[in-house]
Image 1 (cartoon, rainbow, N blue to C red):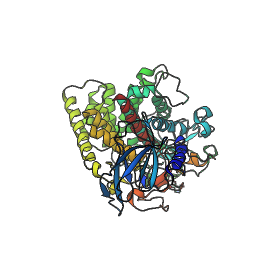
Image 2: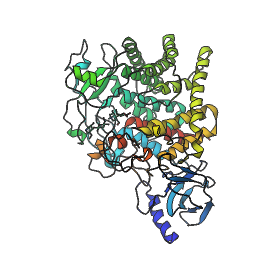
Image 3: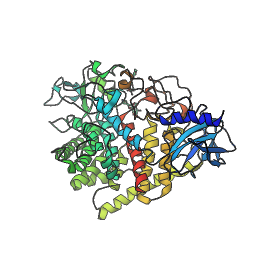
Image 4: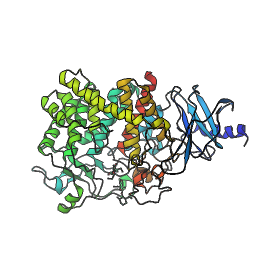
Length: 583
Ligand code: 9MR
Ligand code: 9MR
């Protein structure tokens, strides 16, 4: 093909990089970050299968060659005969639109300052689209506007949740908050964890978030948009606390998942279900954290900071008094009607939740009782946090305590920092020789339900913290590498965020998007990702661990979206973008 003619087609594609275009990347032989690279960032693409002799980077506008290089190493996939060859063009640093030509493929890419800023904004905006009990207005949501649904002003106390002042069947009001995921239910464990992660990263880069505007109804007020969005869910969470004893209902849910219908068409009754120790502790932790972060914003949220701390302490006290109150859905269904079969967010150990909650409450109140509980629940090693393991959020709290530490507390924080740095050092060890040139994705254990968030993004966020502690560039480089993986440099060639990239999920398991009559999915959501566990029994194009992904609506095990996964994307995209300005 005539290169000049081809470049014209590519250019057309570049203008609308958010939409898949057939003119772009026909063979998919080359995998790269489809959103682009920061000028100073390492720039690596991967030939998906094969060895090549050379490659070229050309200016997409003029067609002039700007770089020609020899490939780097070739590494075999652990699961197939595919040979991945590394193409490093980090030497190209001038902002612009380019094409990379190799292995018979011509792939467009950009080099740009603030290249992840639109992604960081869209990831935060994805929470707005998930809001319940409010109209999603055209001026904020464009074509994805929709009427208010799920007011949740008529919610039933499930028999498992009955208390002295609220008999089964009592009606309560529990409005606002976010839909959890592709489903329409609201779960305390997952939303409190999501808030915890985003608020942690807010503490790292407060100036970045102070400047961020994502066009939500609160955007004009005095509070950063990120905190405004958190407040929308925190205010729901307050209604999930039983006023009689401080315990927190595990979730607000229909007995069964709704069909793929519009939210306004949903008719099933909604219940709050059993108070659980993990819900109470995640609630306490995120509320205590919020009480401190919202203190400067009394003007917009009068009284909230104080209320959050009081309710956090009550929830924590309830958890201490009920350490065995785990949420066990199967057991519950033997005892109570109606049976509840929606997301369980079940967990059989609360040490990590105690660690996180006690840490936040210690810093919010200074009370020694919390400190003692922290000491009893120090994790044995660091691992990135997830909804079921929140110890990592406790570690982040100690790294960023917001006050001077002295005496024994200093020793404590050293221990935790060393744990995190051990993890970081192990993570980056072999990344530089691996098939996709990233710490993530080299072990079959890296691929499971929600792995792109829990493993890939959260590993990268941990590396951002490690970089902040040490200034060691290799940690930051490897955080960017996992982002490159998420955005296209991977075995399927997908940029795994809706609405972004040249090959992007079009059919996520997302009831809001499936029922809105709009072809394009709602943008800014990270999908769960490759999952050979295939719990949805859908036929996937491949069974290989890193290719077991199906962009079909039925695939809830690989292609659902969820607020905790969006939270990872917010945290990582914002961190990397913030660091690009700070250096
Ligand atoms: O849609 C549900 C999704 O949000 C959950 O993550 C998933 C696992 O709990 O379950 C999905 O619902 C499916 C149900 O479990 C089985 N019948 C088909 C439902 C999806 O269409
Ligand atoms: O993210 C959750 C994942 O870790 C679990 O393996 C999976 C099955 O229990 O559930 C996931 O969470 C789902 C929740 O239960 C219901 N809403 C959709 C969530 C994302 O799939």
